[in-house]
Amino acid sequence: MSDLDRALKFYCDVLGMNLLRRKDYPEGRFTLAFVGYGSETNNTVLELTHNWDTKAYELGSAYGHIAIGVKDVYATCDAIKAAGGKVVREAGPMKGGTSVIAFVEDPDGYKVEIVEDVPNIG
Image (tube, rainbow, N blue to C red; front, side):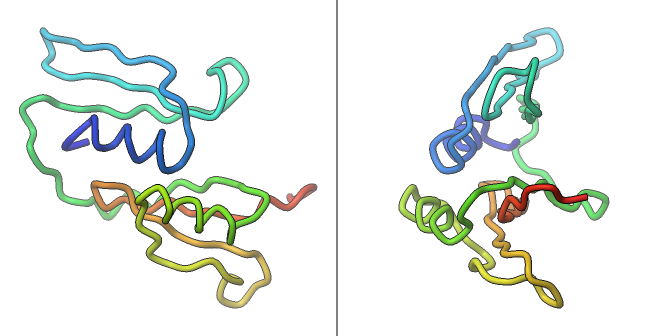
């Protein structure tokens, strides 16, 4: 993350996650922040790393995106836009399928897929 506070604002204020813990490592010159929708014991969380001396990163080609399941992709996109988030692929059926998806972009340009949660998949 090139700007941890900006990233936390996106993941917490726009996507509705909670900051679960944050710790500075002065000797290593980095900060780790963990965000998610619930406690780390029962939920998946994201680890955001801020290297203090790195001002910018290039988007890597080995990383695709994360996906978040929601009940209503259309309403979620409206809420994301209202909170200042950037929707880069509007809600609608995926190409060649029926699943409803959308994509938003975090402050560093990484994509987050919003997908309609379908019970009993897979």
